[in-house]
Image (cartoon, rainbow over the protein chains, first blue to last red):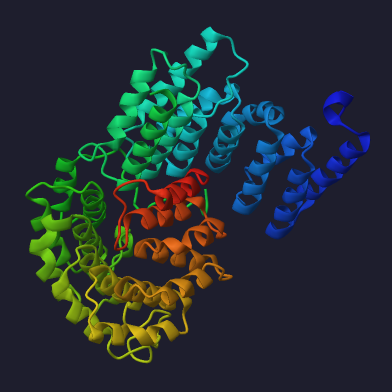
Length: 227
Length: 282
C-alpha cells in the first residue's frame, strides 16, 4: 500500500502497522485477537483502518471495543473505510460502525446515524447514534450547509424523543444539548430545540426521572449561556 | 451483538402487536407461545386495560406438562404472567394474593418470578413468607439441589425482594445476614444489596464495590445492578470504571440518581457528577 508521506508519517511506521495487521489476521484465539487489535489501534496509523473495520465483524466484543477506539482515534481518516461496504456488514458490525461514526463526528456519517437512531433494534446503537447526531463537526462548513445539517440532526433527535427506551431518550437530551452549541443565539431552530428539551423535562410526558433531570440540566445550562 | 445487554429474551412473533391483540393472545390457553409473548408484552407496555390483571391472574394459575414441540417450557406462561404483574404497579394489587400462593409452588423457577414480582410491587405483606423461605439459611435454602445446579430456594430473588420491599426488622436482617458468606458470589451480592437497602450501612456497599472487580463478568454485572438498585452514590467512580458493558453501567448509574433514601429531585453537584459519568458512557 502506498500513501503520501504526509499522511503516513515514517515508512517504518507503515511497516510496523503492516506487521500488526498480520498479527490481527493470524490471531487464532479470542485473546490473541484482542491483544493484536489493541496493538494495531494504538499504532494509530491510517493504513490500519480497513483492518480495524474488519475486526468489527468478528463477533468478539472486546476486540470490537478496541477497534472502535482505534477508529475514533484515526478520526476523519477512518470514515471512508467505515462507510465502504457498510451494507455488507452483519448486524453486530453495523452496530459497532455506528458507534465509531458517532465518536468520530464526521458529517459523512450523518445518514448512517439518522437511520440507526430511527430504525436500529439495539438501544445501545440508537443511544450512540443520538449522541453522535449532537456532535457532528460542522465548524468548517459554510453557513447554509451548516444550517441544513443542524436541521436534519434536530429533526432526527426530535423524532426520537418518544423512543421506548429511557437510555435512548437520555442520549437524545445529550445530543440536543450539544447540537445547541452549533446554533447562534438568534437561530430560528433554537425554539424548536428548546421545545424538544422541555418535553423531556415534563413528568406527564417523560416517565424516567433521570431523563427529566438531564433535560432540566441541559435547559439550565443553555439559559445560562444565552438567556 | 453479543454481550451488549440489549436483547430481551422474547420469542419473535413477527409483526408488532397492540394491546387488544396481546389481550386476545393471552386468552388463547391452547397456544402457550402466544400467551407467553402476550404476557411479556402487557407487562412491558404497562398495560392499564381492565382485563389485563384478571387475565394475568388466570395465566398465573396455568400449569402444563413440558411440551418441547410448543417451543415454550413448563410453566413459562405462569412465569411471564408473574413478571408482568410485577411491572404493573398499584394496578396489580389485586394479584398480590395470587403471587403469595405462587411463592409456595413446587417449581422454584416460578417461585423466583413470584418473589421478584412481589418485590417489584413493594408488597409488605410478602415479607414474612419471603423471610420464611430463607430461614433455613445458606445450608438449607442456599444448598444446591441434588439433581441440578440450582439452589433449593431462589435465594437471589428472595433476598432482592426483601431488600426492595424495605421492611428492616431485626428478624429480616438476621435471616439475610448469613447469606453474605454464601459460596456463590451472586448470592453474596444479593445479600449485600438487601442489607445495604435495609440498613444503609456503608460496609455492605463496600463489599459490593469489591465484587465489581470479580474475575467473572456475570458477577460484575450483578454487583452493578445491585449497587444501582440500592442507589449507593459512593459507588459512582467504581461503577464507571468497571469492566462491563456501558449499557449496564448506565442502568446502575441511573439507579444512583433515582433509588435510595434521597432520590434526586433536582440537579445538585452530586447528581451532576453522576450525569457527567453517564454522558461519557453513551
